[in-house]
Amino acid sequence: MLQGFDENGRPKLRAAKRPITLQNLLTHTAGFTYDLFNANAVRYEKYAQVPSLGSGKNAALQIPFDPGYRWECGINTDYVGKA
Image (cartoon, rainbow, N blue to C red):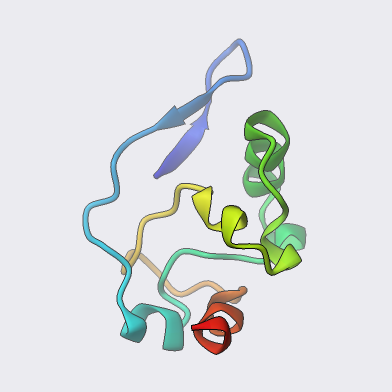
């Protein structure tokens, strides 16, 4: 999970507490967001050079979120459709 950034701009990460489930994706609790709602996601995308969450690319799923933690409107169902 992305917990913010240190004083040098490097992401502070920890392992997710649980894997993503289909239920998480369907109920918007997988941790995925829209870039425009989450400045830290955008900052991480730039730092890690991964595609934006809205790109629809599987590589975008490398952004570290914590499934089951909270509801957040985002790209969850987009990836259900891809599956």
